[in-house]
Image (cartoon, rainbow, N blue to C red; front, side, top):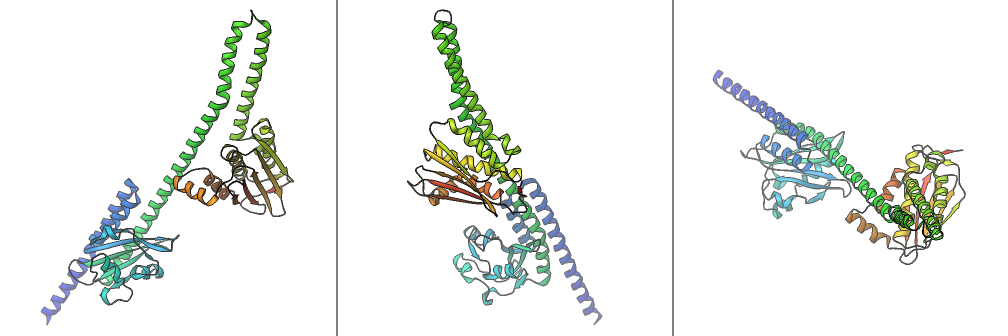
Length: 415
């Protein structure tokens, strides 16, 4: 009898030691993943490392890591190891479907001893991808009480069933992994936003360079050539020299006017000192010398102020809309309307240009990453405003921005 008791005690001790070793291995694996993440900062690489480490620690044959897509309300197989993993990658299931859906919707781990008889199990996945799932353990990836995905570990190499210790181990591993995944996502968003801002900056630089080349640069070249010619004729033909001086003065004045308009377009002083309504009025007055476009202003508002970032974004939308009407729609007349109600300030730009199909143009812009209409929409979001674009081929375009006056975040001020 003592021998049996001694043997049982030894077996328990061995089991405890094995579980402890497994937990240590899990911690070491997670530490390695964290170190790799800090140096590589790539989401796809991180997900692959997390799953690979989990499969190894759990001494399993296969596994999958799914992330939630809130837009489609689906779980996506981001990484799959074992079987026909490459084929299953990027496949989607409903967020409440299968074992993964059960875990995701309830934010609870689960052990499945026999997948073939479990009603939650999606048999079609095994059939379609020629894999046989016998036992599995799955855990939710939870970050700040929000489930962002599920990690599944499938079939122990030893053929044994998964036990509660395995479940606890995977749950702890999943919790730490969720933090790493969210950090990687945040980093990706920061990089994407940085790249977008760089693209916007580059487009602004190119646009400014084009305007300088087509406007002041050519005028100044003409002035220089005129001065050289004047130098040759000033003594021989005084009358002709006087006419040339008058022309040079006209060209210089025109160049100065263009440069001042460009500086105003970049950041009008009136926008900061007098507000959006005054800045629009000055903008219209400055454009009055443009013989190719008749720009009109219809306003019943004047002394309304918003936060600087809101006024800057709103003014940029007006500029973009007028610029599009001139360059792309080939409009002859553009009317800027500024209307105030008790609840909002409405800014609109209406042109008589060629018009366009709004849906098809927005889709094309989204695919090509064009910064025109999309920029206006982003700026409208910055204003917490509502932007609408109404247009039809041959019927002109109207761009409307509505800014709520009683939005606390905007701090609109009426004087």
